[in-house]
Every structure is written in C-alpha cells, then in structure tokens.
Image (cartoon, rainbow, N blue to C red; front, side):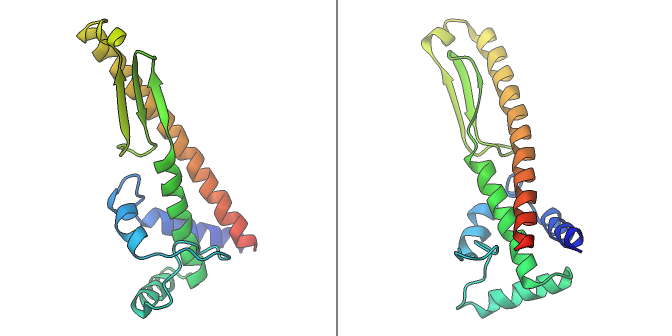
Amino acid sequence: HHTMRVASIVSLLSLTAVAGFSPCFSRCAAKTATQRYMFSGSGEAAPKEDDPEQLKAIEAAAKSMGMTVEEYQLGLNARVRFENQISEMRLTGGSGDIMVEADGRSPPNHIVVTITEDGKAKGPETVSKELVAAFKSVAEAAKTGRKDAQSNMMQFIADEMKK
C-alpha cells in the first residue's frame, strides 16, 4: 500500500511539468500560489488558509488523481524541492582560461562564461572548441545532477509517507 501511494505521488509529478523544462512554474505558480508550513510534508504546496478557491482546486485535483489532499500536497512540495535543488546547482566545465558555469536546468537559467586574456590568446577556433567542450561537460554534469535530485525527491516522498 505504501509503495502504491508513492507511485501515485510520482505519477502526479510526471503528469505536471517540471520547472527544469518549464521555467514559468517556479517563477509563476510556485511563488504566488504556495506557502511554507513548518511541520507538514505539504510545505510550499500547502494552500493558503485565506484562499478557499485554491483549497477547492487542490481538493478537486487530488480527488481526480485518487489521492488525499495531503498526498497531493506532498507531491507538489516534492516537486518544488526538486526544482529548487536543480536551480541551485552550480556546475562548471572547461579550464581556468575558458570556463562555463551553469545551473542544473535544461536549458539552464544561470550561465556564466569566462574567457581570460590567456584564453583569448588561444585564438577563435580554439576558444570555440573549448567552449563547446565546456558546455558539453556542464550538460552531462547537469544530467547527473538532475538524476540525483530525482533520487532525493523520491527519498523525500518515501520518508514523508512513513510519518
């Protein structure tokens, strides 16, 4: 039964867009329609007490997925945590002369490209090749980081379901 509930919550996550691939979620919905509750797995996904419309929408969505409101909110909170973890990643690729830093999103929202004077002295062809290699390195690291974040999200859900 516990595994079934975790699977239901995971299905919620898979049916909803992940902000790593839908930038508006974390900037729009998550920040305007959520509030942190201190002692609840629902966390940022908990409805505001003074917003009966939001509570009704969450109840309807939970019911349509065969979940309790608490399970639905746990799934939403896990998603927010997952998105935040990906956004907060800082991955680097390249050398000291030609370097790229990015977050874990795909495509990234945070990108810093550093090319020193020594890097520029290598010539445009070398700079181009090294930048491509640096971006590939960062993309691979981000892929691994997203997998780790997903594992953390699954563990969070499992831990919260045991409470």
